[in-house]
Length: 287
Image 1 (cartoon, rainbow, N blue to C red):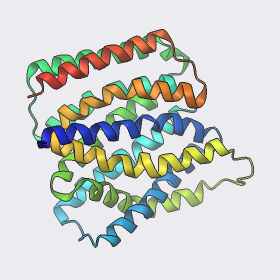
Image 2: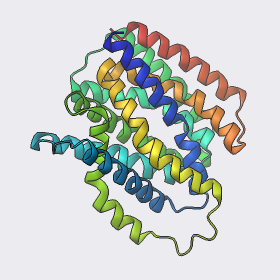
Image 3: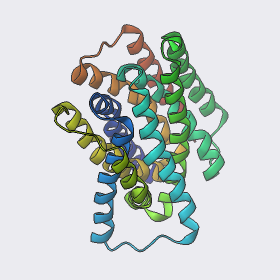
Image 4: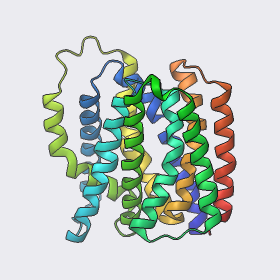
């Protein structure tokens, strides 16, 4: 099995894990404050990451890697979780998932800027078509209903794409799980302080669904998913494997319907089917 195929397999597993992130976040913010949720999930994941680094006796990253680790921390440890948590107080999980279709384009752009990748013109055509389909659906589904929620999600997509591309570039030399673990550890002091200041007055009214959501986003969305995702991006190419995120709305919508009882419209399913076609075409023309 060649490295490209391994990259797609690892990327697909990571994408599946991430597919449940927004439904889980939606369940968690029903009872948890978004700021506390962001701090708590990062702190829990950071403790687990630190344990892994200690267990495998990983060496400290070099000085040249610190800035990249900082970018990863800002993008995927702090920025994306916080902005999506704030957005999910304004919009439904099924609606927010559609925005994820814009993430591959964001990742590919930063892959060019930060990692020097150069996909061909046909790749960009299909990547843009897929993103335009998703963006058009989002615009037609009620931006005026929650301008703030849409703004949060747009910001989350931009900063996450930056964090994905930078993390994948770093993972080529540092390793996939090491990259996210060091980013979590770097952000731990700030997150602990943030968790203390946003600590709930009482946990008595926190329902089981919110606790399950917190556990999922802390362990799987914040750590385990990145082990596969960063490895996949590093092996198969940031722009190419990143297109797998176009499939995330399809799986995420199903999970939102099954786990949260949210309505999945026919239009949502059509959009998902169209972006699946776009990701297959983008993969074909990526090299």
